[in-house]
Length: 254
Image (cartoon, rainbow, N blue to C red):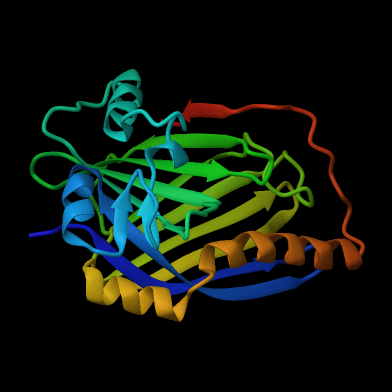
């Protein structure tokens, strides 16, 4: 039995100030049990692991981004947070590569203990400058709705200042996924961002159906980011220069 899944849904961004701005795009994501990658490579004709295919997944797109084991990367960072890694399982919510290309603004690692209780979440955030920051949270109570908050530590949008706070609200993956991020500054809410999706099995049939619905999705994502940025600039929103260069930062938040 395969535990990995496909989620078809949409992404919404709504900006509240200094000008209102809204967009919504249809997408599909994979929720991949990292221990199943070799199995998925063998069983699903349209999917490959660390090699080219119509749809593929590469270790080097996440974690240390050098192609090393993502399971080992998660374990290493959990141990730094004194979270037990004994008999854990790890699922990753992300966009796959389509025709060899992907850009993931946000990927979420869900870490479960041997009794299938959620014990940690890693929010892996990327910007279009090739940089990445991962926020690690211990899950204290295994509720269906998990809420986390922290200060912003990473330059993402050139139209939002660094002095902000994130409030994450996510549902444990099941028949649906929901990942919501509210961003606030000292004067109130700046941005609402969400990803919602409905589950289907990850197999050749449903993967092909998802691809047909979104044949250029990963290319569309990066084009949409720049298109929406242009519209923000055209509305007269201040452009904020990025001053710090990083590659892969990690912060332990609780």
